[in-house]
Image 1 (cartoon, helix red, strand yellow):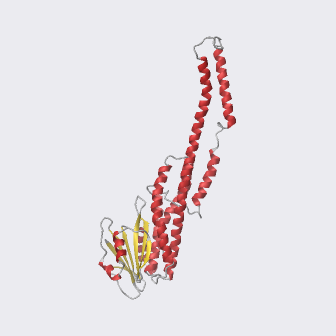
Image 2 (cartoon, helix red, strand yellow):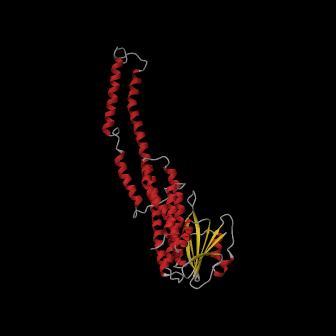
Image 3 (cartoon, one colour):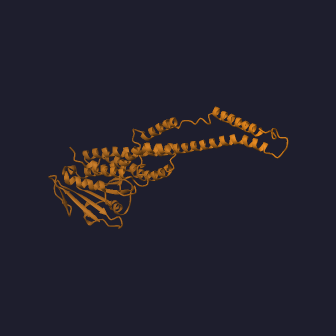
Length: 372
C-alpha cells in the first residue's frame, strides 16, 4: 500500500505531507494505492473521517460498478478508468468526498490521477475549488480516456466498412474481439453516466455550485461515450451483415460460373457420347470429314449456349464498384450516427494499436491543463 497526501493550504500552496493537516481554510487529498496482489486493510488515518464502514470495506476488498451514494457527512463516487497495458481493461477508482478532504482509493497505477497530481503541483490554483471540484476534474480525466476509445473507432470505421464489403477473411475474428472489448467498456460507461447525472442534480451541501457545473460537463463527456458505444454496436452488426452479403455474392458468382461450365459441357458430352457408341451406321461415322462436321456442330452448340447466357445477363458481370459505393455510403452513415459519435474498440481489436494507446495517454492529461 502506498499513501500520498497533498495538503492544499489556505494561501493556495500545495505540499506533500506525511499526515493530514487540519488548519482553517486548508484541506487534504489522500490517495491510497493498493497492491493488486495482496488484500489490505484500510489505514488508521481514515478512522477520524467516520466513513461508511461498508463503503470502505468495498473500496479495499470488492469490485463495484460505478455509482454515487450520499451519506450526509460524506459522499462516495465510484468511477472506472482505462488501465494501461496490452489488454483493454478497466480499474476501479473510489472517491470519498468529505466536507474538507478528498480520499481516493485505487489498485495499481492511474494515469489520469497521476497527471492530475502533477498538474496540481505545477498549478496549485487547480485545487482552489476544494475536494468536490477536484473529484470532478479527476472524473473528467478518467472519462475522457474512455472517450478516446470512441475516437479511435471513428478513425477506423471506414476501414471496417471496406473489409466488410470485400468479405475480408479476418473480419469476423476482429469483430469478435472488438465486441468483447466493447462490452467491457459499455458495462462501465453507462453506470458511470448515471452516477454523474445524480451528482449534477444533487442538493447535498458537499458539492458547491461550481463543482456541480463541472460534474455536468463530465456527464456530457460520458454521454458522448455512451451514445458512441451504442452506435458502434449497431455498426458492428451492420458490418457483419455486409460481410455476410459480400460472402453470399461471392458464393453466387462461383455457383454461376460452375453452372455455365456445366450447361455448356452437358450437350457436348451428349454429342460425344452419342457418336462414341460402338454401333454401325451412325450418321457420318464412315465419312472422311465426319469428325469435322461433328466438331463444327459442337462449336455451334457452344456459341448458342453462350448467346443464351449473355442474353440472360449471366456472363455480363455486374459492376461491384457501383454496389460497393451505395453500400459503403450507407454503412458509413450508420457509423457516424447519431451526431457522428459512433464508437467502439475496433482500433484496439484484441490488442490496442500503439497509436490508439498514445491517444489514450494524451487524453488522460487534457482535463488538467491550467485554466486561463
